[in-house]
Image 1 (cartoon, helix red, strand yellow):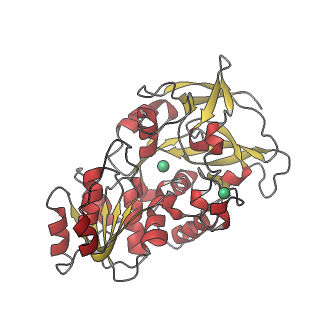
Image 2 (cartoon, rainbow, N blue to C red):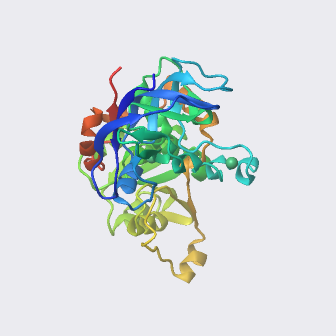
Image 3 (cartoon, rainbow, N blue to C red):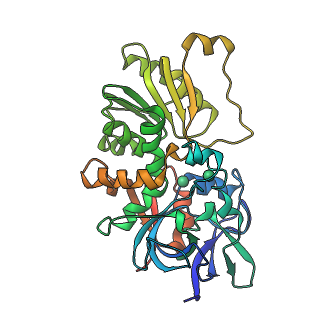
Length: 362
Ligand SMILES: [Zn+2]
Ligand SMILES: [Zn+2]
């Protein structure tokens, strides 16, 4: 069973991923070997591939995955071969200060798996699992704590999106903004995360959901997921939002891009006393500025959301319940399916559609 499996490997930042083969070990104590069924292509994969976000190299990217357990190591309980699982790229240790203070998304140990080689390339070189997952390989070996079981009737291509986009987008709305029925919400950036945030706002009972993205084709998707208005963004956005929210601005803005101008737009689109939640991951070279008086005058809250401030062990089952009740449309978020050898095309198409998913053969 330790045979080679195909994988797309990033050898150096700025290069395309290259298809090759990995040799994976048998799962060690506390580990699980998973055969991937599907892995979504997330904007963070592109940021890691370009070098905007750094990662140990060479690396098998792909962190939004679902598959089936094929083998478990010593001491693993509650998981058996054949079980369908979603992979959690930020498994909590349950012991550090943050975990003990109920902030497992900030776990001090969450990035540890990404910093340890998990497999070898054909020439013997050690390779790292992207964000600890390595979802652009046909199989992976992860900690049992990174596996969240899902029901057998949830299609794994849809389940994959629970591993990043949906947890992140819905989590920002539920756990960070805490949107209430009747609230107004602006969502800026309508990729997989932003469209999940739109769905989160709808599930929370928001009265106005203003979805913002300049890309053609986003309006139809956003309306399908609950947007009451779709705007292209740009310099006039804050005024357009005020015009739609009684002249005040929105109660909440969810920023899913991570650029200075969209973070500013999120801030400026909220009302006095409102809240802007930054979900997008920006670059260390880009600054966002506020003048001192506006901080006082508008009395807004500016906060970030990390992985939707979720505990996937708790929140994935709750999202599955939303899916089962027909409240959460996962199938609609999958707008493109590609085999592994076309993963670079899917990376290039980020920004179009909702989510592209790499689908592995059975
Ligand atoms: Zn992601
Ligand atoms: Zn921890």
